Every structure is written in C-alpha cells, then in structure tokens.
Image 1 (spheres, rainbow, N blue to C red):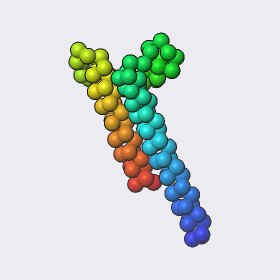
Image 2: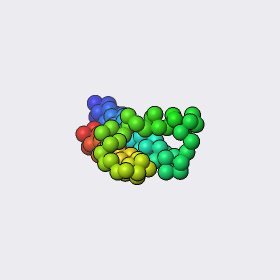
Image 3: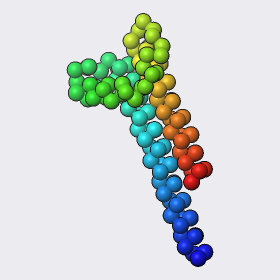
Length: 105
C-alpha cells in the first residue's frame, strides 16, 4: 500500500512539475514574441516583410490592454514602453502561476 502511495506521489510530482514548466515556458515564449516585435520596430524593420508582419500580428493580441496604455507622440517609444510592459507582465504572471502550481500540486 505504501509503495502505491509513493508511486502516486512521485507521478503527481512529475505531472505538476511538467505543468509548471509548460506554464513558465509559455510565458517566456509570449514575452519573446513581444520583445522581438519591439526590436523590429526600434530597428525600423520593413513592415511589408512577412516575418515582421507575422511577429506584429502575433504580438498585438499578446500585449492585451498594455498596447495603448501610454500614448506618446513617438510610435517607437509607444511600442517600446507598452509592449515592454506587456513582456514583463507575462514573465511575472507565468512565474507566479508556475510557483502556485508547484505549491498546490
């Protein structure tokens, strides 16, 4: 009986650890998309390029309500600040969620 409880506990710990890892990686990937968008805008990447367009299209919904949080005159500054804050938000949220999953698991 103790062996099955121990095996269940080990399996549960692996599943919880894997789930926490997936949440953390998802947050990192979202933040990466946002940061790449900022780099492309700051570097004056060609907006007609398919890669630039793909990254911009992917970043927009990931920025949530942060995409127009600040509205400076300079478009580059707006992207830097707003999408940068969104990237930090996703890093913090995914980190906190991963810790919660590990603690609750």
